[in-house]
Image (cartoon, rainbow, N blue to C red):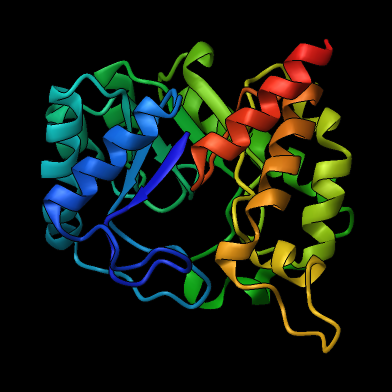
Length: 262
């Protein structure tokens, strides 16, 4: 899954693809590089990010999705709002990637069920503005597993079929670095639930901390690609359904090495 943020304030590529032509060119480039999906988002979910109005979010994503779908690209929409998801699906989006797992908008389940599209449910505890205050766990893997299953139960009760659901542990969302590493170490617990699992580690802060220089300054986002590719390879080998990344080619190269080793 290639990331296409059409926002001014995303943590690593904010502002680069606000122009429609630039967004379409980058989406097609990721598709040609081997992405199976291009994930279009119109609202930043970086730590501390402010929300945008639904009309603004729709205005950002709809023309990009329509253009990419017309070019033969399979598109997902990264949104927590049912209204935005409905507009995106009408424009050609084939999957809804909901970082709130359905918690932010109770109407999302109906939209997804009516459209018959897959729904990615990410583990989420609150909006980006203050999510780190919610990063308290007894056992992060057990807690994330149980909270994700509660979202699965709610989706099923709303009429979304089990085969339409994908789970995402939500690395970096209401989680400190040690929580992210523990979820990656014990990814088998989530894989054991029987649902496809998406992992989104690309360029995230815990990688910058790992790669800090001798003075302790975190590695900037653009310098975290090799670490991202390493995680892509490791979780692919573990059995993950997909990875959400900014640099499709490097992660796909790493995954191909894993496949070649068998």
